[in-house]
Image (cartoon, rainbow, N blue to C red; front, top):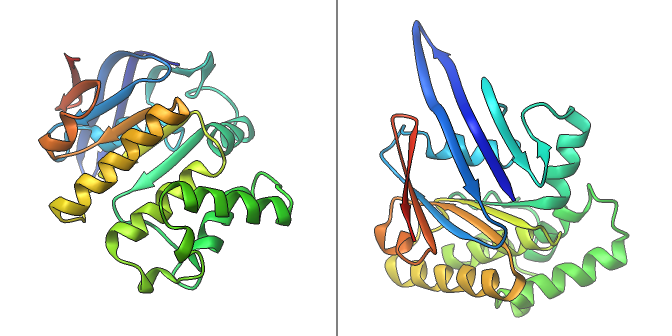
Amino acid sequence: MYEISGLTRTYTQGKRTVHALRDVDLHIDDGELVAVQGPTGGGKSTLLQMLGGLDRPTSGRIALDGTDLATTGDAALTAVRARTVGFVFQGFNLVPTLTAQENVETALVPLKVPAAQRSTRATEALVAVGLGERAGHLPAELSGGQQQRVAIARALVKEPRVLLADEPTGNLDEATRDEIVDLLEGLWKEQGLTVVMVTHDSVVAKRAQRRLRIADGRVTDLGR
């Protein structure tokens, strides 16, 4: 799945050079559920952005099924993101003027899926996350947990191989957090996804198959 070697990301912040990732070597197997923890500013989100092809490293190699995301062209990289990787964020990132159904369908537009198929697949995705009866509701009419379920459905509707989640339970209470983690774990098992999840919450991290810790741009594998 992922083969990472010598991955380094630096950027300038004013007069200061920030080392977000430092010479990271890492392998993530197909079908793994991995939790990433560490202090704020330690490099967690930067690693996730690299895994999703949202940012490019300063140096090093990050290969997804043999495709080096560091060097592949912009068009090919966009295609990998569109077809292979699903994203879930802490802030849900739903379009407030679109219904749950329409928000999920937006993920299929870049793939040029016909309208009828988009509708069918979005409905199925919402049913899979337990929101089949809420398809016509706007985000403001949904609870935080329900909005995150819509966001998960939007990530999964394009049938990706990888799901990247950045603090997916960060804005939720404990009960809702547990529901979302149960959902992600169930989808991981049922669909054979590779899931990489950034979290500050040790309760969430302990549910993963494997845990990584990032601090000062360096990755430590805490094992299974």
